[in-house]
Image (cartoon, rainbow, N blue to C red):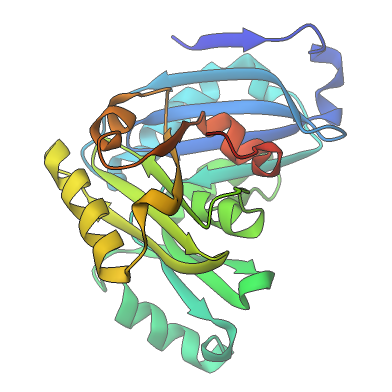
Length: 265
């Protein structure tokens, strides 16, 4: 069953005016409807589940889409955030058409039968490339009878970055099996990566080790923390002894309108 949240402005008869944003990960499935004018979220639903392999997501996604009546309405546009663990930021200079096949074969597992999605990030003059199975692409396009844009969660944060009054800024988005880490120093991106998590100590070690290797001062960093599926304070608690400035965020806020988030001490 889905947890359901709707505000007073939601109107089932006006879904054509809303942007539908879907989140798909190994941890679960969620979606929210956004009013484009002020980017406010007017409806939100989610259901958690645990899947051991990305190869099994397609069948579960199809079941959930077909079980939700609201999604059978028409929307102004549809976007899907796919939480792919593997991705790579590639400068535009290296993304010439004849080089793309060679790049994907080097960057990703040749045994994985996936389509490679390219999200352009204009300000960085780069593209974020990540694999999505053809099954998931087909399920989304067939269900909605239209093209569905697929976006990596980090693309949104790199296109519309959070703001902070601190010298440095970092974002962690956690899942049950890995976490994303973005680090900016003096407003310049120095890292965007993912790290596997088998035990909670893996997260602490990788975060602290990365900051040390990059020479980024944690005391001068504002750290934004979010979970892929639900409000989870575990990561905040784990890192609180090591960071003076931590802001706990909802993934819904980060994906719908990250520029509205301001610095908080």
